[in-house]
Length: 470
Ligand SMILES: [Ca+2]
Ligand SMILES: [Ca+2]
Ligand SMILES: [Ca+2]
Ligand SMILES: [Ca+2]
Image (cartoon, rainbow, N blue to C red; front, side, top):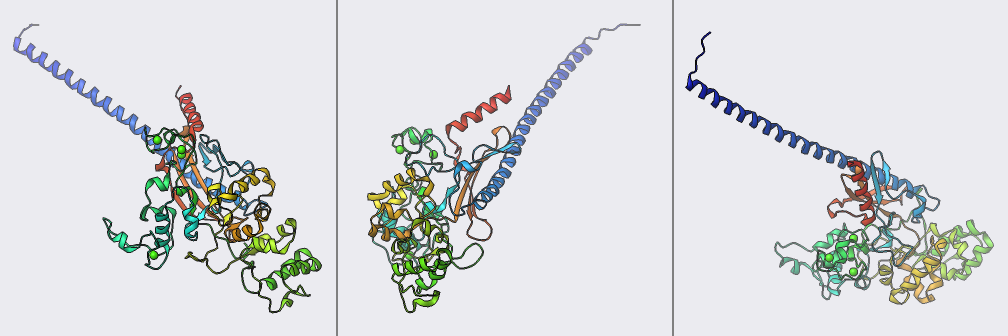
């Protein structure tokens, strides 16, 4: 066997070895690259799965909220938060929370989230509140309040300080004044003078909680005042959904004490529930004849501007009133400055002090007393009757048309996460229970506003993740 040592061949072999090594190295890099991108892809897919889980949990939570609101012994009363699941509720591997507001306390611990359903009727209705009522909201300027009135009224007459087509024509790009009711509170962004500061205030994520960035002054947005209190914008206090029905859930008409022949209409209801003798006595208090059968009042034109006024003038007991209150409605002609004819009073049992301050007859003078009464009498918050114990008679009658003790629209502000706390999602569902069955009348995604559960829940979430990574 001959052995040759051709030097050029050896050089070629050496070169080939180097080339092979380079190729091998290249292949390894490619493998590593694909491996890494697969891992990233896997992680992204995992996050997408978590987000899908969270989306389903949102819808599940909304259905649960509808169940809670309808399967209660007092429909129309905001359910007591301790009677239903509202915090970190498991749905498969996902969880959900209801972001709520504590209506029982005037000074909620501002850094702690409150979980529960929200009463839409605790807010002022953007389509029916008068100029004076809107002007009393925190952060509201008289000009913006006037511009809101102009935005929703059908005419083009500029309210003092307000804005009609001329103002909007000067904008870039220009647009028209709507001259029709608001379809959502978010529509306020189009109204002249409504900036982020007045809309959101310090509560940039609309959760009713003083988050870290909302109490650090100028360091991060928003530019808050660092006073340890949450000063929200007007979005906190406004709704377009509140509306009192004029029929009972089964479709029969309620008794309208605001219409003509109010006494004749109410007589048979009173007789039914309280007996003829007591009914006649009450009808006499109300200025009616109280004679015999239902239609006997003949020619009496007594009407009441509100259910509360009816109660006060009737001199019936709170207990008697509770037996007929849900059957009563007062739909009078529209008040000056209102465009919509919908009857959309504020629920005095759930409204915040800021909203109560806007109510004629309550105002700054009585708003805090109303809240204090609620704190001391949590067992009586299913009626409007007690207001007559707090306000002087004339004030109560003035406040009556703007108040109710019953709510028919509620919001489930749901946050959900998928497995291991991943895939954060948030959506607000407005649920209307005035009909035979509850229905969702609006859904708005709020995931973009970021974490809304406060610091405590975030710490728990992080703990869960680190435990799982070990
Ligand atoms: Ca107008
Ligand atoms: Ca907040
Ligand atoms: Ca800040
Ligand atoms: Ca503040």
